[in-house]
Length: 358
Ligand code: NAD
Ligand code: IPM
Ligand code: MN
Image 1 (cartoon, rainbow, N blue to C red):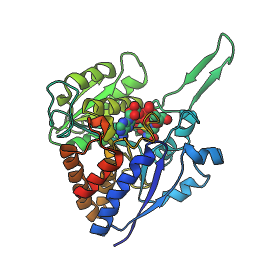
Image 2 (cartoon, rainbow, N blue to C red):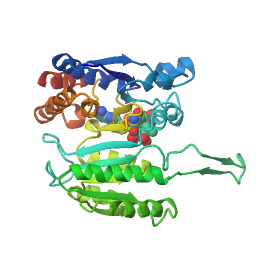
Image 3 (spheres, rainbow, N blue to C red):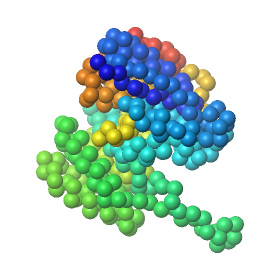
Image 4 (tube, rainbow, N blue to C red):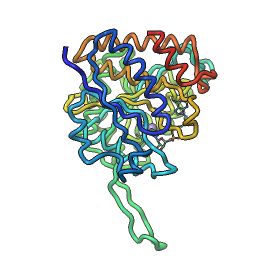
């Protein structure tokens, strides 16, 4: 059996607290199933890498990482020391772009054992997949400042929507819907206010949807879509959105399903030309860092998504992914729970409970 090379980047803040809990589970599975996972660790983060080297990544980061099968990522950002746009454009957003991880897959699910803040909703009522475009759209560093420092000062920030970029994420969303029970895709846009890119997205949606007659679809302006997430989440199956709208929906969705602390994500290069990256949806949470109270499940569930992706090339990883998901479900149902879930357990308690449940 060949080995699978995993690059581990805990990052900043609670990334460093939740990563060990994912590694604890992976270690147990690696030896039990002979997965052949080979983990290498990288300390690329604001604290202390940036402070020491003046950059988030070393100059040879691309060459260093490109041969890996996957990247397991915690979270990056320490705004008290480094502006967020500097640290994020210097690391995570670079990985997404340069490794062409054009899909950001973010499942949203109300899990048994997790209290739902929405009245009357039970597990099964919230179970959808946000498919977020991950390399273009509103996330650009193109634009600039004119007449700086004067009363006429103005800034321009461009958005980019290419036919290639829009079509490939829409196709991916429809193919995901084909694998799911409800076979429905919802598109998020804002074509009343944003007069060029969003009507273009709608036009591509209509064209691509026509190629999937087995899948029903609809579209909403993002403003009313956020209201529908809260009022009637059961109507959603696959939700496809641009980079920014997908970002917003993938925090709102998990909040509707109880906590952002359990939400996982997969930044995929589906063609496997480059490594894909697996990370929790949440960030480095400086407000709770150092207290050992962060929920580790978003990180551990991201490791499940990594194993599922690796399972397509090494089937024993699929078995390991199923076992790890089962262990997460057990702990969500029975505890122990971190404070975001209403409990008093520590990050370590909860991570150990998942590993013990394996
Ligand atoms: P955040 O997700 O870090 O935190 C938002 C809120 O959710 C905080 O109150 C935090 O305590 C809570 N929270 C987050 N994860 C939790 C967990 N696992 N368990 C319990 N509570 C949890 O978002 P933010 O405050 O907007 O950003 C903080 C920093 O993280 C910034 O530098 C930001 O740019 C960065 N960030 C990085 C990523 C990433 O690396 N993927 C994602 C989002 C934000
Ligand atoms: C996420 C994060 C990132 C994003 C930030 C940190 C740049 O919020 O992964 O959701 O906006 O994509
Ligand atoms: Mn986000």
